[in-house]
Each structure stands twice: as C-alpha cells, then as structure tokens.
Length: 217
Image (cartoon, rainbow, N blue to C red):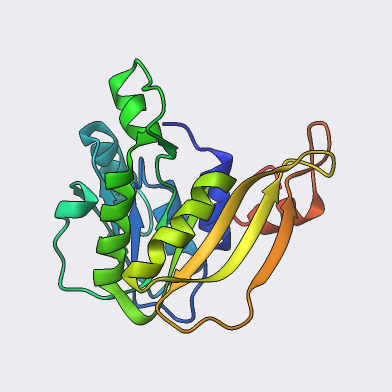
C-alpha cells in the first residue's frame, strides 16, 4: 500500500479547531494518521484498519515515529470498532469501487473495493462517535462522493464543505474532498484544487500544502 495522492491531500487538508481525539478509518500503513499527528500536536489519534498486514505495518510505523505516544492502530472492521471516545476529527480515504469488478489480489481488493453496506456502516459508526461539533472528512471519486452526501443525511451528517480536485486545468474533476458534520450547514463553500500546472510540474498550491511532509518541496 504505497503512499498515494488521495491520502496525502486528505491528510493535509482535513482540519478542525483544537481536536483532542482523531480517528483515521482505513488507515492502511498509517500515513494519514501520522500527518494529522504532525499537524495537531495535542491530538490523540486512533487508526482503524481491517487488513492485518497493513495494521501491523501501521503499528510499526507509529512506534518508530515521534508520534508514538499519541497514535494507536486497531485491527478491526469499522462496524465492529468499539470506543468510548467522541472524536472531534474523523478522516477516511475509503475503498470506492462500489459493487465494481473485484481486484484479483485479495488484499488489494479489500483496500480498493466496497459495497453499499460498507458505506452505510461507515456513516453509522461515524455518526455514533463524532462529537457534536466534530467534522468527518473523506476523499472519493465524484459519483461516490455525491451519493455518500445523500446517504449521510439520514445519519444526521450534513455537508459543510466540498473541495473539487483536478489533475490540471485541462482535466475534469477527479475527486471530491467532503466535510460532513452534525451542525446545521452554513451556505456551502466549494473550491477547486489543481495538482499540476503542466505535465510533471506540481502547482504552487500543491507544493505549499505538502511542503511540511515532502522533502522534495
């Protein structure tokens, strides 16, 4: 499970005022959780992962980092995750090929594919453990993001912000980063974020966003 653009964008963009507890759902090897630990130095972060190998890797990565005392990986499906905490910040870069052709490699298939039941479990659990003022951030392809925003309403999770992600000025929107919460939404804020300004050349906004995480910037 390599570091991917979706994950680092979510880890750098998702935000909340002075969170005490954070949760990364589907943490993989723990990259997003550690980005959040770097950005929010007072936050305790739990990271949930269904794949045993990835969860073990996350545990090792956390232990070897300067965030070890504030990060913990949990091997569990999100539907079965038990906690007494209420999280001010929840993030997820979830599998997104809903009911699509399964990847022949089992572990990669688990990481990249999900059905509607998974997203219902995700929304239900997030609603249960999100604090009243908390925010739930996700990154998804456009179609899945639009469907999830609709599906979230019965769980009391309402769209607060949407960021449209484009590869460059010539390409259509490829991802939405969405922010959900239990608060009555203000007028929706929406913006567009471009990754490249030309082939192989990142935009100044991308470099600025990720300069604290990538040595190349």
